[in-house]
Image (cartoon, rainbow, N blue to C red; front, top):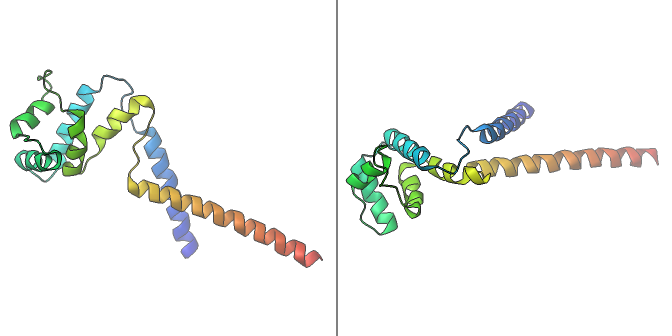
Length: 147
């Protein structure tokens, strides 16, 4: 039974890695509209109101951010209004959505990996070491029996 669970965990890890690789985020350096769309989606999915999001962002960055500013940053028609890059981590923290960070890093071929995914990667590495040690142990036991 435990082997099946471990197999499931390993296959889930493989699926997660493929998902990370295949994320369909546009690969160009004009990220403005992508960020606007991602922010709009994050706000829509966040249980907090825009006023609360703005207030919590203000607290994190130490600068007053209003609902009006937030609305302008996500409006496709307000090209003169763009969220400052230094506010994006606060936006991600408050909404719980890191899509904007992924969009910014993608043109450089860099992937943003969440802590949970790092744990899965570490787990997979340990499993590989375990397999290697098990194979070496088996080989040594066989050689010891021969002598």
